[in-house]
Image 1 (cartoon, rainbow, N blue to C red):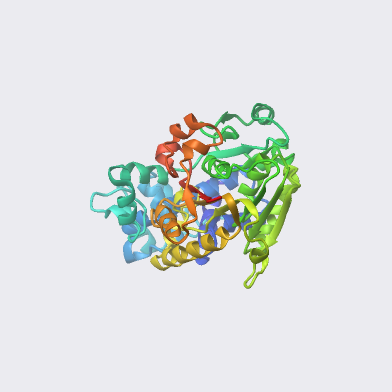
Image 2: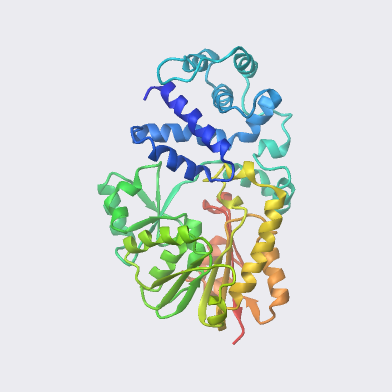
Length: 433
């Protein structure tokens, strides 16, 4: 594809994303490229990079474009090119109106872009929330959470995330998987904190490689691996992944259990559970039962106090994953947060019923907000006196020194700036014997 054709595809994809605000951008992109298999791998990457760059600069572009047409994908892409150093005549040339190229800029569009020529994305008059690409209502919450580290944390959150893999120890070792990836032309380095992890430079086609097809590796952020490890799921245990989704942490816990014992993957979404089946089969996992939670479900009542471990990866704002999902910033509202806080409380209360005496409830989110993390645990403990938090150094599956290296105390709190992972929180709450 020519640069102009890539730009035209980027405009089309960005249009699809802006017209479907409640659907994740990566899911829209996946559908977009699946319907356009004529677009090769390198062109897909180039188009995606253009679109994701716009999503990462959404509020700053809004500030520059103002009321003059900020909602236009054409203007957003053109403005980003100008504000990141592309000369105006080069931008104008891409909007040539030729075959596979975007339509020629109209008089209004050209006037707007001409005004931006010579400027950069940053401007001293930008409000902090705009400069940091954070919704206005969240900026004070994040400032309270990070204090003097706020600028560093938000800068790290604005950068693209690395590609992390979890090695499936049911089938191979980390070194063997690393060697197999190298044979496929993919260089991977061990992750600093997870002994199961590999970090890959760039965005190579992992899913097309033999190590992925054969179930040797799964795509999973190192932070997610560490959160799953806190379940300390062992062979022979009875374990529940209460909000399993597509099964990423289910797979990790099944590996920790060495396929022995009983692991139930629950979720309110039948399609997500169905999507997990292919991953379970590829990984060689056979100790997992899937259960679709529906309103009025009697399953919890039938299994009261029946599990050694109950893992709750609660639905949340996803602020810790903004490196991967920058589009989530533009759609999050105060009512979303309020609804999520209520839902998290309800889920914790239900999941706690499944924990046996002496068993553990692990509460985890991919949020950076204290309101979704420490405050939720505190509220839960106020109403559940038979549960108490465990110091992580005493129960860390990889040893107390590894816990200390992460700064883990009563809770696990990972951030992109301090740990190079997605933002994750986890607490281990043990029920009295």
